[in-house]
Image 1: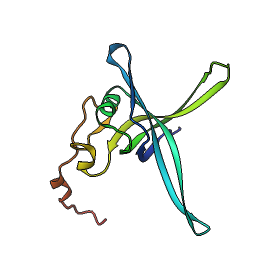
Image 2: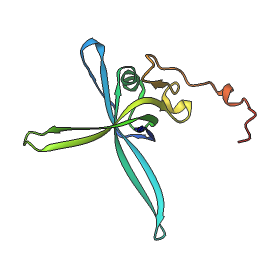
Image 3: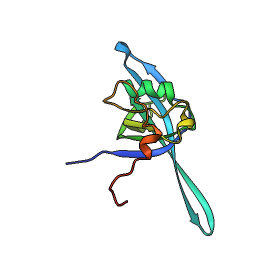
Image 4: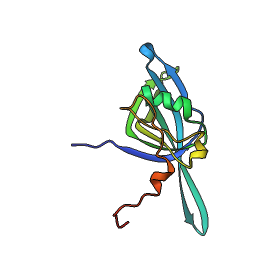
Length: 142
C-alpha cells in the first residue's frame, strides 16, 4: 500500500495559464507559494516554497474564471514528477501537484462574488456556504 497525497494552503504566484486540447479538454498551470516563518538568532525568517499546480478539465475552467495572482487557495492532490530533454539534449525534471480539489480561501469579498469550491469530480463550481450557516452551533466540544 502507498499514499501520494498533498495538501497545500498558499498564494497564487501568477495568473493561471490555460491551454485547450481536442474535445474541449483544458489544462491549467500556475505557481503556488507556501511560506513558513520562524525565529533564528532572534531574527524573524520567512522561508517560501514554490509549488507547480496542474488542474485539468472542470477545475481548469474554474481556475481560468476565478483564480488570480495573489489569491489564497487550498489545494489537494498528488505529486507527479516528469522529465523531458531540452534543446541542448539535457534531461530536465519537474515535480507538479496534480490537483483534485481546490478551494478559494478568505472572506467572500476578497474573491469577487464568492468563494467557489471545485474538485475534479465536479463539472461546475459551487457557491460557498452563506454566512448564516456559520452561525449554527453543534454539539462538538471543540
